[in-house]
Length: 226
Length: 226
Image 1 (cartoon, rainbow over the protein chains, first blue to last red):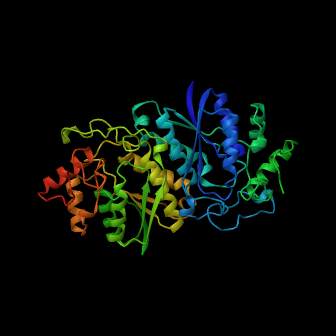
Image 2: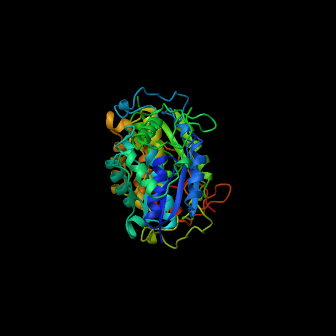
Image 3: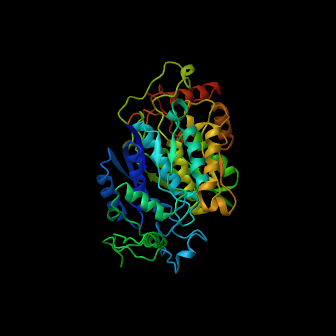
C-alpha cells in the first residue's frame, strides 16, 4: 500500500476526496487543521469521517488564524448571507481566509514528507465554489511546484503530487461519486455559521451550494438545517 | 510608511534582514514561529530583537512541528555535529525540518494580507548554508508565484514580493551589512543545540558557519559558547 495525506475538514468535498484516495489504494493519513474557525463543530465531523475511513493516523493540528483575522471565519465579522445561489462566486466573500489553503497544504507537505507519502489529496473545487483564489487549478499547480523545490524528498526522490480530483467538477457530480464509493454524508459538516449543536444555517454560501446540489439530485441532504 | 512582514527567528540572518527592511523604509510586522523547536531559547532572542527594532507588532505563532517530527530539531534525534566547516552543505543534515520555510512563509503571507503589507522579508541564504532546499532562490521564486495566485490581495491588488536580500551573500558580508546598519548581534541566537541558558555549543553546523564568518572578519562573536 502506498500512503496518502488527505486534508480533511469534515466537509462534503474533503470527505469525498478521502473516499477517492482510499479507492485509489492508499493508506490514509488525515490532517485536520484547528484554525480556531467559527464553525469548530466541523472538527467533530472530521473525527467521525476519519473513523469511518479507518485512517492510519489522524492529526488535528492547532494553528490559531484568529491571530491574523481578516475573515468572518476567524474574527467577529458576521458571515455574509446570500439571497440567491446565483450570487455565489461573483466576488470573493468575507468567508475567505487569507492564505488558508497555502497554510493547510504546507502542513500537509510536512506530514507527507515525514510519513513518506507522495500524494496529498485536497478537496478544492473551482466550479460550484465561492470564488476563493486558493481553490483554483493554477494555485494547486503552483503549490505542487513549490513543494517539490522545498523538500528533501521532493528533490532527492520521486516528486510530490497534489491531487485535487474534484477541482473541475460540479458539486452534484461530487456527491454522486461519493455515494458510489459508499460515503455517508450524514457524518459531514458544511455550514459556516451553525448553531452550537451543529445544526446548519441553510443560508451561508456553503450551505446553499450544498443544498442546491442535493436538490439537483433529488436526494434529501441527511444533515440538519434550522 | 509601507508595511513589511519579517520572519524573525532571532538568529543572525533574520535579525540582519529586519535591519534591512527597516532601512528600506518599512514599518515592521514581525512573525516568529514557535514550532516546538529544540532550541526554544531562540524565541527569547526574537523578542529581544523585535524590541530592539521597535516593531509595530510581533506575533509569536505556535504550531507544533513535533507532531510530524522528521528532524533533529523536532524530535529526540541527536543534532549532527560536524568536524569541519568544509563538510557543511555536502548533504542535507538531520537538522532539516520538513516543509519549514513553506509553513513559515504561508503564515507570513496570512499576516501580510491581513495587515496590508506587500513585502515579506526572509533571511534565507544559499551560500554559507546547510544545504536546505527551502533556502534556495528557485524555492523563493516558486513560493512568491504561489502566494500571488493564492490570495485575494495577490490577484486584486499589487502583488506580494518575497524579499530574500541575503540569499546570494556570504555570511561575513551579511554580518558586515548588519553592523553597518547598527545591528547588535549580542541579541541574537544561532545554535541548534544550546545549553538551557542559551550558551551555544560551537559545534553544530549553525554555530560553525557563524564562527567562521566572525573569524574571517577578525571580530569577536558577542554570544557565549561552551
